[in-house]
Image (cartoon, rainbow, N blue to C red):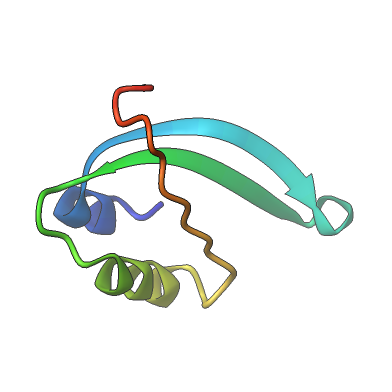
Amino acid sequence: MVEAVRKHYVQKVVLKRVKTTELGSLFELQYLLRMKSGVDEKVFIDALRTTNGNLGIAMQYNLIADEY
């Protein structure tokens, strides 16, 4: 995750999992994020896409906010 994007949109981040894909040519990173108040998730994802060369991004909501 690019540091400037993280600082602007995310309050807390935890790297949960690292996995290789495409026969080891790509890494899939899974993070737990706590977004800053009032952040538009679409704007956040668009900012990530522009910094990561338009590779895939998925977002899932965690119903247990205090899990991490």
